[in-house]
Image 1 (tube, rainbow, N blue to C red):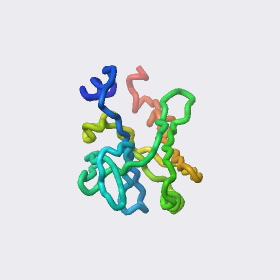
Image 2 (image 1 turned 45 degrees about the vertical axis):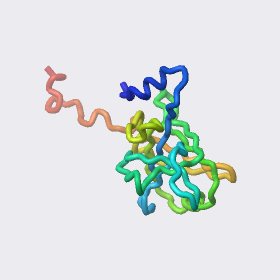
Image 3 (image 1 turned 180 degrees about the vertical axis):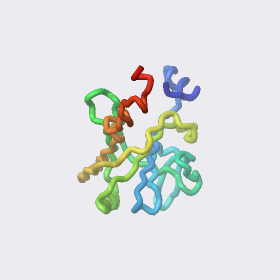
Image 4 (image 1 turned 90 degrees about the horizontal axis):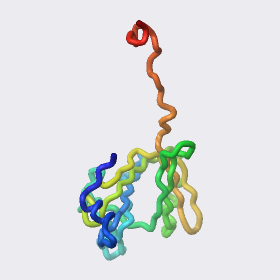
Length: 174
């Protein structure tokens, strides 16, 4: 069972509310100088020249003053745990800057993506969190950038780790 804050539960149960869910994205890669921090909420003006909006949060150890989550036009499809469904999701970013494509084409190994869902009124309180997802591909068109990410397959975990021998599992051999 997932723990949800009282504010989030009140907002979900209300007929109408001023609460707004925000998705925070934290993308890490060894070739990046600093992690890329993205937000779906233009809640606060961060600078005038260039004009930037974003969200200040302490999630993933970020300093809210110097490391805000920058607002981007993004939609997402989260990984599913449904049987026979691929364990992958995608981020669809509006392609408003050519430097994004240049950055995505500059490395060949996998980046790590973490996603948190927060309320705009309480960006430090995590309502849902998906960490250590792997960025598997980037499809770039003139209008959007689609980033595919996936969790590690639980089907590839070794089970059982040992052999069912009399020495290791004496309760089975009576």
